[in-house]
Image 1 (cartoon, rainbow, N blue to C red):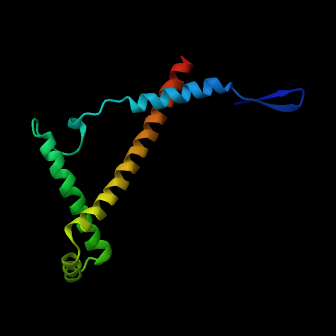
Image 2: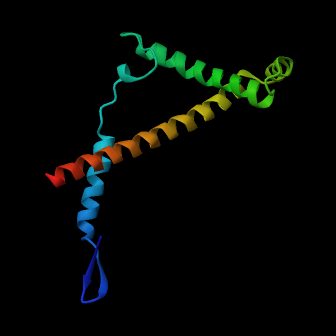
Length: 131
């Protein structure tokens, strides 16, 4: 968008919609076409045992996160209250609580990564336009 002043009046000129759509599609396609490697993840995946460890992480990480939620938020960090709450709550409920919390964290991380990728891509494109 550019503001031009011709003989004392302000006019606004917008770029063509086709150019804006084309540039936005280029950014989105680049992010979604990135290669994902399990070796780049912060979790430990030994070679040859990736699927087994993925299953272990799928069960254990949400359960541990659910236990931490029960201990710190529900039981207010009191061990006796936590034992009583944990005794009354089944494994699947604790796992589901942790799974939902983990899902929210992963979604927020994906959004943060997409935003930072878009900013880097825009910065990279603007530097090339200046050259």
